Image 1 (cartoon, helix red, strand yellow):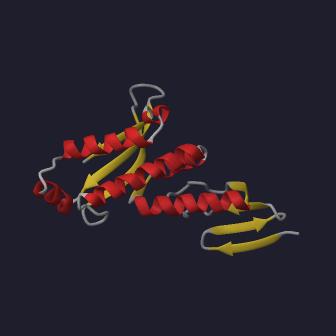
Image 2 (tube, one colour; image 1 turned 180 degrees about the vertical axis):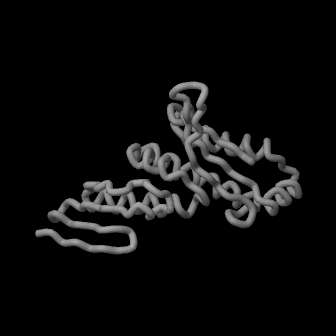
Image 3 (tube, one colour; image 1 turned 45 degrees about the horizontal axis):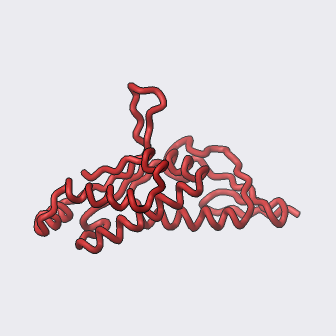
Length: 171
C-alpha cells in the first residue's frame, strides 16, 4: 500500500509500514539546488530522530550551512556531540548573563582552506552582538577569555578525535 502526503516541506510517500520516501523541493532551505530532486529512504524511527536533532539544532544556532548539516546527518554520533557542545555553550553563556539573539548568535559552517587540499574543519562561530560586547566588558571579560572558556568546554565534551576536526571562534 502506498500513501502520499504533500506539505510545504515536500512530498512524503510511505511505501510500506517501515519506509518513507521524502522529496524535498529545491527552495526548501532557501538554497537553490540543495537537495533538489533527491529522494531519501529513511525508516520512520530514524526520521523521528533526525527531526529531533534538527529541532534541537535550530534552537541553538542562528545561521547554518546546509551542506555542513548534510555532512553531520551522515555522522550521527558527531552530530549528537556537537549538539551537546552547543547546549553547554548556551548554558555557559547564560551563566555569564549572555543570551542568544540579544547578546550573541551562533553560526555553524565548514572552514575550507583553498590553499591546502583536503584541509577543512567544522567551524562553530560565536558572534557577540553589540549588547554582548557591552555585557562582557561590564563583567571584565574579553573575547579571549570567552574563547578560552568555550575551548575548555569543547575539551571536556568533545571526543579527542572530534576536537581535532572542530574550530571554535569568537567574533
